[in-house]
Image 1 (cartoon, rainbow, N blue to C red):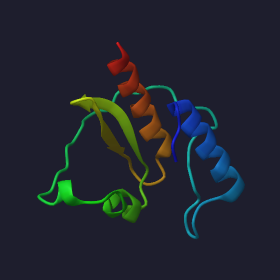
Image 2: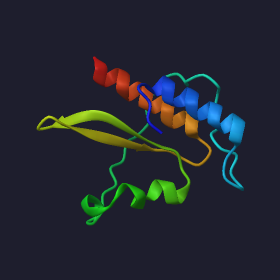
Image 3: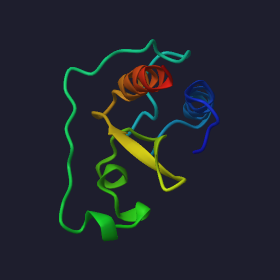
Length: 109
C-alpha cells in the first residue's frame, strides 16, 4: 500500500483491517485507530545477505514471515530515492509505525 504520509498509510491500513480482517489465522493489522506516537527504537539492526541486491521485492522475507514492515523513502543517491525498510514483530504493527514516525521526524530536522 502506498501513502503520501505515515498517517494516511496507517489510517487506510487500519480501516481495511477493521472491515476485511486478515488472512485466515491472522487478525490483520493490530494497534490503535489513530497513528501511534513517535517512539525511538532501542536498537537498530542491518540485515544483509550476499544475494540481497538481486532479490526482488516479492522475494523479501517480511511478506513470507507475516511481519509488519514499512519502506520509508528517506535517502537519495544521484537524485534517485533510496528507502529504509523497517521490520517489526508479529502483531506489533503499531510499533513499526511509531518508530517510523520518530525516524521521519528526526530526518525532517
